[in-house]
Image 1 (tube, rainbow, N blue to C red):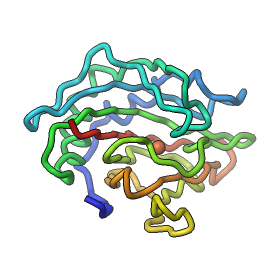
Image 2: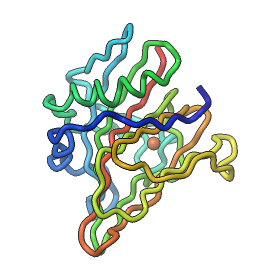
Image 3: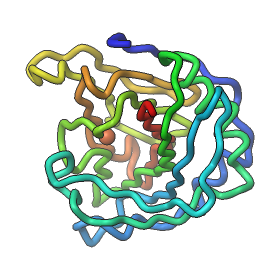
Length: 208
Ligand SMILES: [Fe+2]
């Protein structure tokens, strides 16, 4: 699948939307201002069924892939049990339906990018990058008062060639090949002075 799919997702529950208010700050940022909150869980799709890996909340990328925090073993709080079924049915399986048939190792990142009047939120502090998987899906769950946050995909072999550019509105998910495309999201600031946030679920797929 070397194309890019933009899909509409079923309505999200209040429980899923509100769950982002409780995610703790990402402890691995290099700024005083905690611009990212994050939970993470690994899982697997075997024979079309998604299984959460209960205790697998360790996330490690190589320095090659992530110059910002690559090489550091990062532990995050797990994705809350109360929203796992929603995430599985409404987000993961909809992304999976776009992919070539296979079993997959899956990573689920629940992320809030946060900004206020004095501080911008930085969705991709590592810059234009690939995640090191076969496919990546980014689902926008909710936004408030956001200016910026433009999702951009590039030809992986030529970052001067933009192949997609757009703002993911709540209820949309973009699914793309991580081998063929590099990705980036522009920084977030408040549209009107105050706080702003952009809530997404990023799912990674590695064929097994
Ligand atoms: Fe990424």
